[in-house]
Structure formats: C-alpha cells, structure tokens
Length: 272
Image 1 (cartoon, rainbow, N blue to C red):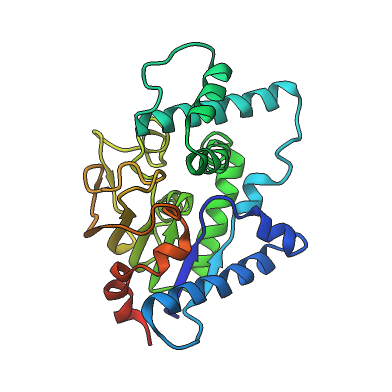
Image 2: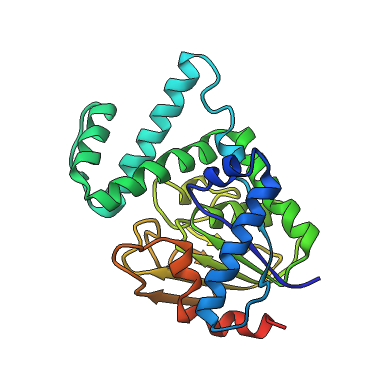
C-alpha cells in the first residue's frame, strides 16, 4: 500500500482521554497534527502524508494504579531507577548515593524546569514499558498491527516510539519497511533502554531489524531523550545519522523534528 506510518512518543495519553477512550480517535487526532507539522517542514500542499499514527499510549497507562501496595511500590521504584540512570547519562548526580526516593527528589529539584518536566513524563512511561511485560507486548502489538494493516513504505518513530517500533519489527520479521526514520531516539541510552531491548544486544551491539531496508536516525544535539544522539556506536545497520539543532526549548517535540530540513531528502522519494 505504501505511504507513511508514524509512531508517537511519550506523553500522549491525553489524546486518548480527549477522544473519549478511543485509540482510533486519538490516532486520527495525532495524524492530523503530524500532517500539519510535516507539511510545514516540507513546504508542501495541504494533503495527507501519514496514513496512520500507531497509537499505544493507553496500553501503558490504563489501569496503572490497580494492584496492591507491593505492585504500586515496585512500579514507583522502577520509575525512580529510570530517572536516576537517565540523569547519570546527562552527567547529573553520578556520584550521589543513598536512598533511591531521596535521591530522585533531590534530582528533580536540581534539574532545570524543562528537564524536570520532561523527566516526569519520560521516566514513568519508559519504566512501565520496560518492566511490565504484558503492557510492553500490547504496545508492541499495537504498532505491529498498524504496520501490518497499512503496509507502509516508511515508518517514522519518535522518542519512546522508536523503542516500541524497533522491538515490534524484530518480533514480526515478516513486516517489511523500505525506510525506518527514528527521531529523538533513546534506543542507545545505557543502563536505561539499551541493555533491556528485545532482542538483547550481542557483544554490546544492536542491529537493524531484518525487515527494514534502510535506517535513518535524526537527533537534536541537545535532546535529553536521545542520549547518545549517535546510534551508530550502538547499532549495526544505521545507514544515515543526522545530528541537528532544533530549538533549545522544544528540543524533543515531534513538531520540531517533522519540521526539520534534515528529514526532507529522506522522505521526498516516498511522497507521491
């Protein structure tokens, strides 16, 4: 069928709530926005660019507060550990030890406002995805189902969506994609994401999913989710690495990434 499928990143559960609990409604609302963002970046006409946005946020959030005190405590600890290791990748608090809860409280107070706000979205969703296997599988399956249904030539995956997409494509090797574009990806983040990927890296290296013909990674040099921004050091099969300078405030938004000139030459051959 061709076309482009998008895979969203962190903090998108609100779309689901606004759509009255409809994943399809949330996906369509996001698709309309992503079309506008990409149109602005390409300088193109008002037309559909994305065939669908693979929506999975509800799988990570719905019913998250259920379960006993031990379950909730384990989830909180997993979130705190992601926050601590993410901050260590930033070089913040790497020598601090002590109670995990006290450390994370200190850490959020130490970060600037934009980084703290990002961390409060990033850490819980990444922790849930990497530690709750049932939710991880449902999120991954939602992405795989969208790719299977739409048969896109291109998949554009942002933020945590790049992790879900990477695993979905490995888990479903029959899926074929001409181009995978990862934007602001945390795939290479040590002690947070990289070592926990499925399949696990071998000898410190991941690999491009077998069904992907070409992989382009684009990351802002100051994006605190994309640590490290260069994935070639961690993954075989990254064909093109583009390090860009988007915006010192909006360093991670999909709007800035889709409007980035670096994306144009990679997507242009697939626009009909």
